[in-house]
Image 1 (spheres, rainbow, N blue to C red):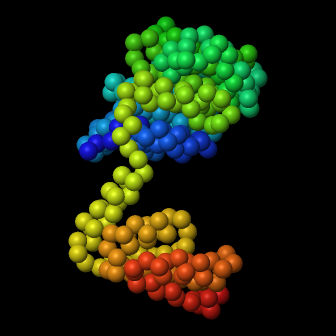
Image 2 (cartoon, one colour):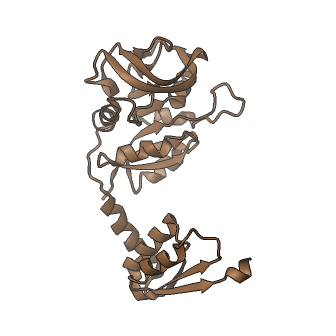
Amino acid sequence: MKYDTILVLDFGGQYCHLIGRRIRENGVYSEIVPHNIRVDEIRLLGEKLNVKGLILSGGPASVFDVDAPKPDRRIFDLGLPVLGLCYGHQLIAQIFGGKVEPAKRKEFGSAHAVIDKPVGVLNGMSRKERVWMSHSDTVISVPSEFDVLAHTQNCPVAAFKHKNKPIYGLQWHPEVVHTVNGAKMIRNFIFEVCGCVANWKMENVIDKMIEEVKRQVDGGKAIIALSGGIDSSVATAIAAKAIGEKLTAVFVNHGLMRENEPEFVKDTFQKLKINLIIMDAQERFF
């Protein structure tokens, strides 16, 4: 089964993974991908996922930087809905020939957006919405094929959409709780604009990973390095479910752990049906 999926293009924004989380909270799968993912790579992902839309994240760069991160221009020709947030919003405007300038007054924090046209992503919004801003560049105007959907006191184009294509931009961050109706804006994009079906849940991924480990080990044995951190602990738990006693986990105590961490790792993972090797290498490391 292919899960309906939204790809989040990562432009280095601090909220990038939060965007992915907000999507998954709605029962729709999301993947964080590089900002410059190629069109052929998106099509390749389509072999295992039902890619229904793209979100361009925010980021610390300015669109005026010489080395400013840019997407593959051809993604806008795929026919997929696109939503640009903050830096992504400015990028879309610039790519299509809009006017972006350094803001006369930078916006950081809560602001009131006036919703001029409550359509698409902004469907169901009130005339005024409290939103969270964090930007130093501003979209001043959009090309003729775009409509302005919202503005703020300091930002004449705080939201826009393409007149004929499902391409949207929001200067604010709908993924943070400070944008009061941000969750609804994201749902509007996921379900109304992209037409996704909520056919994914975390358990699906866990089952898929377990089956993948079984296939890779193929009846043999496996060894895993267990540090006690989140990544290796989750990987160990999944591998344990997949192959049980055929798994050997090795934990190296190098003496620089947090207090009682070695004891915690031992108590936690001895409960699993795996071979757990704990190596005391403190003297060697010191």
